[in-house]
Length: 70
Image (cartoon, rainbow, N blue to C red; front, side, top):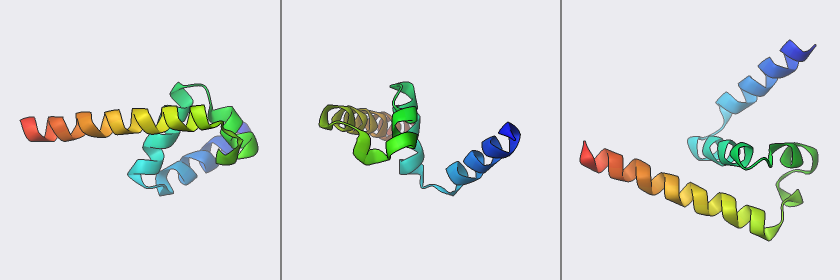
């Protein structure tokens, strides 16, 4: 049963936009993924949401800088 759940999550993850994938990856890094899965994005505090947004901005800048350097 767990294998089926994992495959379903992978399919859902693949269907997301690159920006949404990044948002979920960052949420996972911060240990917030379980909270999001249980209560949705609205379950996060303003501080948690801001942290995700800040890290997304930082990653986007790094990606743009790498593209410019190439």
